[in-house]
Each structure stands twice: as C-alpha cells, then as structure tokens.
Length: 395
Image 1: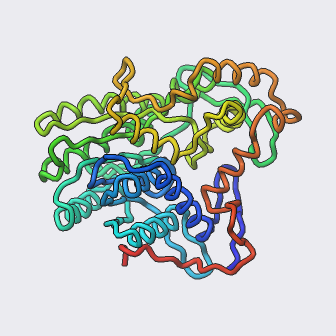
Image 2: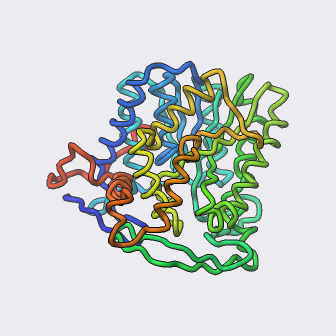
C-alpha cells in the first residue's frame, strides 16, 4: 500500500516501514562513524523501540558489539493497516544487527507486567546468562499494576495552581495562550505510579533475584529537568513528581546492587521531539526555539547523538561527572547559560508571525514526522510498500 501521514493533534496515526528502516540505518551509520566504545557486552533495553531507548539499543549493539534484548509494546502492521513505528524500528534494527553478526532478540508486550518480566528472565537464562547493562526507558501514559491489577493513568498538570503560558500548534505554527488546571485528587499519586521508579526497581529486583546481573552491572534510567520556562508544567508538575521519584529510586537500587558492585544512575537528557514530549503543552514552542539556538551554535543533538555522548564520554569514558544530586547531566549543552538566556529573550517576542524566523518550527515538524518514518530523506513515499513487516525474533 501507499502510506501517507495522518495526524490527530500530537499523534500521527500512521507510520511508514521504509522510512522507519531508513531512520534506523541512519542512526546505525552515525554510531559506526564515531568509533568503538568499550562498553557493556550484554544489554537489556526496557522500552527499546523509539527515542532514547532505541538509540541506546543501537549504540550498545553497533558501538560496543553488544548482544541486546529489547522490550517494547507496539502494534504490528496488518493487511491494509500500518503498524506502529516502534514495531517497524525494531524489525529494521534486528535485520541490521543480525546482518552484522550480532545477537538481537525482542519481546513485544507490557513491560509493567509480571508475565513479560518472566519471559525476559527466561530468555536471558537461555541465551545470555547474565546482563551487564539495563537501560530503563519506558514512556507509557498508563500502567496496570502487576500486584493490584489496578489501572493507573498519568496526567500532565501543574501542582498548586493553574498554569498559563504560550504554546504552539506545530502543525500550523499558531502561537497561543494555554491554561492548564492544577492536579487534584489522586493525579499526583497516579502519575508517580505510572512514571516513577517503582517498575524500574521491580525489574532490577527480579533480575537480581535470579542472579542475572553480572558483577559490576549498571542500570540507567532517563529523566528530564528543563528550564524555568517549562518547570511549572513539567519539573514542578505531576511529571516532575514522577521524575523525583525515579531519581530517588536510583539510590535505592544502587544500595541493592552493592553486593555485586553494581550501580544505578539517572541520566538527565536534552529536550527532544518524542511522542511523549509532543504531548506536553509549552514544550513544542520551547523546543523550536531551543533547536534554533543550538543549531546556530553548532551544538544541536538528536537522540542518537545524545546517547552516543552519554556512553562514550560518561558511562564508559572515565568521567561520569555527576551533579550535586547524583545525576548524569547530558543536558549540559541545553542548559548552558548562553543558550537559555537567548531562548528566554526569544520567548518574550514569539508570535505566530515571527516563529518561523526566530525558531526552528520546520526542524521540530520534520523531527516529529521522522518519528513515524515520514519526511525521511531518500525514501520514495509514492512507492508501494508492504505494511506487514516481521521482527525476525518474534514469530
């Protein structure tokens, strides 16, 4: 079939298998161009099919020749209906990994569930024995708790009062004011349950209990802080409460891993266009200004560049350089004073009429569509493509 992008708000309802495959190949080529990283050789990536999780799997495999197991939750394509981009990304990754002689297997299912944890544990026992690195990169809006069976839903709300500021519809370029009602009732608790550190710890407890973590094993989860411009709706909002919990959990997991010389870290990453960030009011406008400033300074990074730098300079580069709260700060270029001061000035004047000049709305839009395999250079979107694609390790 011929697949075209169909959008609804911050969601793209279709994805393109050839575009997703080309995206994955481009990321692989970038990692190969940067040279080898003396990193982990057996890696589990939880949330492996898009964004930072996919970049982590690619960097592990093609930077360090690592065997990788990826856990993701995506829909395969069926006749006449495209699958989700994560499924196509995983199919492309496995195809390239196997062609390079690398071990790569994937499990598609709810990573929050006990069943998927058990499936992963059995696969590690059968194939790899132990794991050296666990990347935790889940970004789900809902979670069914594996113990209570209760379904929790996260919300994007400020805490303590209504939040009003500018935002942009990145499809139209219209800048407008938005107001968001504050969290109420169980909003904070529910968001922490979905996006906090409980599930990360459950994964690590399960792996350690089965002796599946190697001596000195490391685990990394991803977080974000951001500037004062966005903190009311992000870092000081419900999501921020979840991130605080995630970051506190790193210390608990590190204590649990002391017996094997292991360590848990949280890496604070740069603001980038992801399916999750596109859903957060104010963030698209901030990112469009951020991209403009960082590109002009020659310090812009996408997911793959961020993770390559995380691995090569921090995790395996000899200087992990933690901040005063024990976090890895790979958002250091974003948070440079010169970058943030310029964005703050641009923010004051941003309008629908001038955003295309003072910001990089085109770059934001392109990155958004790239997530779904569209607007990727070198892909013929008028060509007939097979929407039914198999992940080699999934029957």
